[in-house]
Every structure is written in C-alpha cells, then in structure tokens.
Image 1 (cartoon, rainbow, N blue to C red):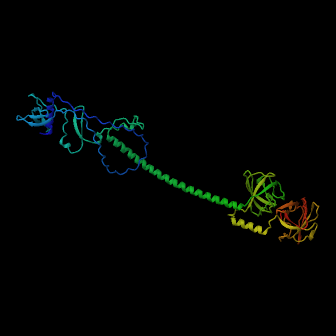
Image 2 (cartoon, rainbow, N blue to C red; image 1 turned 90 degrees about the vertical axis):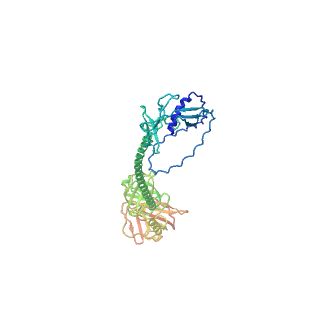
Image 3 (tube, rainbow, N blue to C red; image 1 turned 90 degrees about the horizontal axis):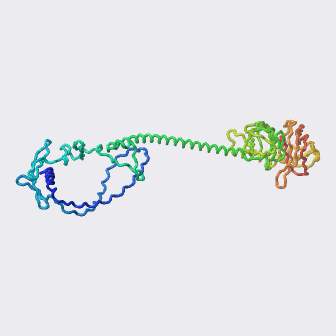
Length: 498
C-alpha cells in the first residue's frame, strides 16, 4: 500500500475521530525576536569600477542553536498499527485500544494515478473529496530540480521549475538612515521579481562600465595636462632663476651708489662736494651733467668714460638713464636713454655709473677697471701740488702751483706741468672751448685725512696758455678765495682737465 492510499484512509478515518475527545498539547513559548537594526543611508552613486572576477563560493555559516522545547502536552490519540481484514477492509489500531475499519475500493484515473474511492463509514457509498490535496507533478518534472506550485483563481493547479522571474520582491517600504519609512525611487517601481532586479543591476553595471572607461580616459588626459603644467612651471622657475642671476650681475655692474644734490638746472660747474648740475629740468632734454669730485658722503666720484651709463634714481622710484658721449665728470656730454622725471634744485639723487652692457660686463671687468684706475690715481680729488708762494709766474717749480696774488679775485693761476705724483699735464693747444665757465676747486686735507674744499673759482673765458714747464690759466675768477699756507700740499681739481 503506497503513501497516497494511506493518506486517503487517514482522511476517511478523520471523520470517525471527529466525535472523539482530543486534547492538543500546549504549544511551547516562542523565543523573543531580536531588534531590527536601522537601515543605513543611501550613498551617492559612485563611479563604476572594473568588473572583478567571480569569487569562490563562501563556506556555509554555522547552524544556529535549536530553540528550547516547550512543555509536553497531554497524550493525544494516534494510529499505532494497521492491517487488512479478511473482507478487504483496512483496520486501523488506535493508541486508546479502539479499532477503525475502512473499506478500500481502488481505481485508476485517466492520467494513470491511483485513486481510492471513498465509501461511507457504515456501508454508505460515494467518492472521497480530494480537493484539499496537492496532486503530484507529472513524471517529466520529477528530475531532482526545485519546483514551484501555484493555484489560479479559476482552479487551475500547476507545477513549474523554480526560476528567478517567479520570485517576487519584498514589498516592504524602505527605511532611511534614521529608521523611518521612506519611499523608494520611482525607477524601483517596476522591480517586482528577482529577474527584473537582475536586469536592472546588469543595465547599470554596463552603463557604469562605460562611464568608468570615459572617466579613465579623462584621468589619463588630466595626468598628461598635469605633467605639461609641471614642465611649464619648471621652465618658468628656470627663467626666474636666470632673471635673478642677471639682476645680480647688473647690481655688480652698477657698483655702489653715490649721492648728489641738484645745484642748478642750467649749465654750471659742480665744485663743492655732492653738487650736481644738469642743463634742463626735463629728463628728456638733458645733454649736460656736471658732478663734483666728491659725493655728499665725501667719497671720490667714480671715473666716467665714454659710453658709460649714468643712472639717476629719485626717492619716489623714478629712474632716468643717460649714456656718456665724452668729457670729464665735471662737464659731461650725455645722450638721453630712458626715464621720465623733473629735476628740481636741492633734489637729492642716488647716482650710479657703470659700463654699457655690450653683451656682459663681468664682475672681474669691474674689479679690474677699478683696481687699475686707483693704482694710477691717488686717493684724493684732482692732482696734488705744493704751494710755496704767490706770483711765481713762469718760474713756478715742478710740483708747485702759484696764484698771482693773495688778494686778487680775477687773475692768472700758474701750475707746474707735472704734479707731485709725477703725472704730467697735457702739452699742446687748449683742449676746451673758450667761453664756457669751468670750475677750479682747491682742496686741503684735514687732521682726520678728509679732503675738504678750501677755495673755488671759475675759469675758461680766456685762452689757456701752455708752456714747456707750466700752464697758465687766465681769467680765473675766484668765488671763494683760498687761504694758502706756504709749503702745504693742496689738491687742485680743474674742470674739463683733471
């Protein structure tokens, strides 16, 4: 007798047991349900990464402990045995000692299944009601795979292999990060089964892959741009370093600063320490510059050669530059180069004199030039002569000078052709144009070693008389008559000559 026959007999036997008193055991207590954790917040959609290889299937988790048994209920009535009587009925032996006889009329339905025909308990006839049972699937579906069963509203019953499109999604509302119920995005509305969920995930996986590829290309392009920027910055830093080097070289070429004060904005001779004359108040129009032999700090004025640059700096940042055409520092002919400013009397200007940069004037050039000059020139303004008396005329001794008188304000000045240091005055025709006032300054060294101006005159209105052993400067007009002491050494600075 197979299991189906037994089930049908039990159904028939159940009707006879309805009159029996059955006490159902009390159901054991159900363990408490653990609290449900809050749902985490939905993160922003990140860029799609590369698809990784499928990982190995993880080991099954540990089996949870069984719950505790509930209290045992009262003993119920059960079937303890069954046998077939001589008349073909099935006799069921109950646990309380009673027996139940069941008639077993068998038949086969049109599909080949065994059917037990129901029969009344005390001789009554009729078929058994099988509506409450599930019919086994046909043999073709019993291949060891999982099957799903369903009943349609019209009574249709069917078995079918389990696939993802038959598994419905959980309709429960999502919760936000605080545990509150929150509606899901509209794009989730169509995800009603596992198949649609899988298709949704696959779609966005593919789209994310495309976005990832595009992002990777942009990252590579960005890295190339970044490398180009770094290279440009490095090149710019090198250019800045070169500029700083050139500025440093320029500072070496410009040399130290000397300070002068503007004495006038017309042609004149700078005689006293720190004086400067220019022939115009407008920087563009300057063609003549006269610098005293000493600057405001009583430092000797640097030698000036043709094509040198003279730079004049104002306190407000203004700068004017000129190129020397020729002349001595007391009467320089210059050409305007650059700068815009106004010259005013008593302005104090910082002055630089440095070689023109035809290529590069090195530090060695500047140092060699300065060293050679000061080896050839004594450390005092002009040239040194000794005073031994007035009115010596053409009998002035070598290395001496002699004004014509001690009181005359317009007179001749006799100077030996050779100074105390052996430097010889040029012999020949006049080297200046008559009619231009030129300065004659006489300096005396004080006890601290500083050369100070002790007399000042203008000359140049008449012709200079050159002789073999002396020079006569005619028409010398004293602006400050010097007080000369016999056998003392003085320094004479003659504008336009030395």
